[in-house]
Length: 430
Image (cartoon, rainbow, N blue to C red; front, top):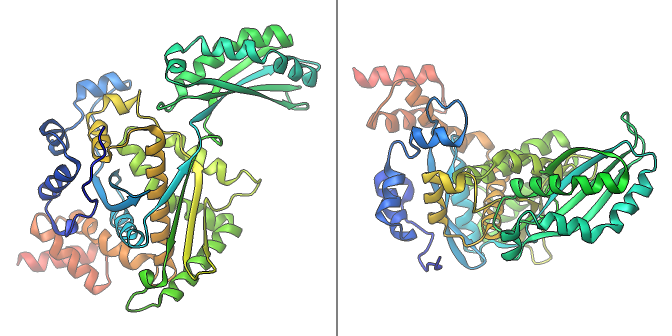
């Protein structure tokens, strides 16, 4: 794919109709007519294709697909597709990206796409001896693993190394666990590493004299990390009600609460995943694997804590950072079979799974910033409930132009309830 030069800034996006928004995105992302049609279709995933993807299909289930604007990442503009049902998520990410854009944008980096496969060995009376025997067979094990995927090896991937972990005393006796460390390139990697784990199992049994049980990947992809960093000035954060310094202090105070308290950290990290998951879903990746890896990584010290950090630098700027596992793929799975996922990837115009991971983690940091900014000032409900008012209006029976009017009156009254929406709608229809 060729990197485009179009900006991710789309003026007045919020006030356009869905058709007008699609037109603007299609122009900026240089989408062809086929892709435009997929995005405009009421049923982007035909039942016949869905029936080939999973079992016992009876239909399809759709989520709203929005596009976050304003993202400038490593000097490159991105329009970011997000599939999510929660109001305010896309708007918040876009608004924070606009603030960050004026301060240089997001700066991201990542490690190589290394996934772990685990091979569990039971029945050894000398687990530490078994460990050294496995390590001595390093080359044989790696060769056997790579023989199962010569195409991956051809493209520069494959099993890179092994680790052996010993659990000398469990309720099931001593346990030895071999880890295959596999560079999966642009794949998520589950099928690849699982196949390799099964391939090396006979070798491990022969070497150790034990019995292999589980042979499966780990979703704690702690060697496959994506990172993002932003630096924002006081001027960029200031509003009519609050100074930039007050904003910074409030954001850092809110972060510190999440850093020390797992009850707060759970909701704090959920806010990060509000940004991450919609991108993962839109691109046809495994959001459950990403969630599992993220929360396990947040607890890697033995205590659950924040995935992000927020600090005030010596220059007086707000610095936000995040580092987390991000096992995403561009090949295989729904990324290749779901038409809407393919269209979403065209909008993103990413060239590698690593690039996709870095964009995704930047969106997570933007979403985190939005939540902390709201919590540190007027509270989370003010902006969220104003956007949620549209859902309440629809639930009360409003349609067409009625939706915006009912939502506006609910927000203005600071009374976003179904009963009040029904009253307003009845008044309007008189």
